Amino acid sequence: MKKNAVYTALLAIAALLIIIAVLFTSLQICINQRNWYYESYVKYGTAKETQISDEEMTEAIFRLIDYMEGRADSIQLSVTENGQTVEMYNRQEIDHMVDVRALYQAWRAVRTYGGILAVIIIAVCMLTLPKGQRIGMLCRGFLIAAAVFGAVLIALGIWVAVDFNSFWTEFHHLFFTNDLWLMDYRTCRMIRICPLQLFNDIVVRFALMFLIPFVLMLALAVWGRKRSKQK
Image 1 (spheres, one colour):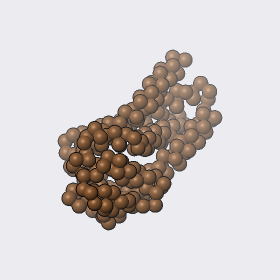
Image 2 (cartoon, helix red, strand yellow):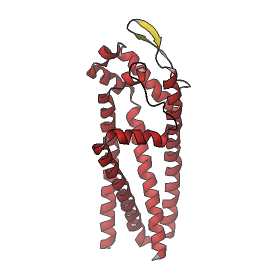
Image 3 (cartoon, helix red, strand yellow):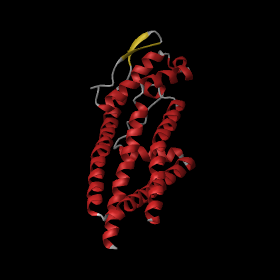
């Protein structure tokens, strides 16, 4: 029984790492779609508010993505605002994005190395477990990981629904050691090109991109667990 418990724990950890990998990959796919930003700006009519063209806003927001991904060395670029050429981002925004890129790159490393570790754990467990227990134990590990992940997600969802401002503030306090994220709409163009509707749409698209593979894996785990019990 102790041996089975060890296998279950290892496979649950591996499954949780895979879930995190799928989660980050879904986010990466979601935000790396340049045309979607342009189409969204056109749909929202954001240019009327910012006095910056849809094309230049798209270039500006995608420069942030390029910087986070390591494809650009700086977020700075020139745009035309109200007929005048200006530098898009101020010093506060530039400094804040240094922290954002570090956080993004850290989670990308967790995705990559965590995924590799998960594959190794699963491979070792599959090679050392009795043949008749492999699928059942693998599915059990995933179901435990999914339950833990779901519980955390529900708790965060309740927190967001009850007090979004508290959640948003504590999120930044957890991942950042300064207050650079507290930006002024009047002086920070980064805030102006990220209206609430754009943010909400990103969250919805990201959630859908993640839920499709997650639900598929969950369904396979449930089916595999039932099949192993029947045998």
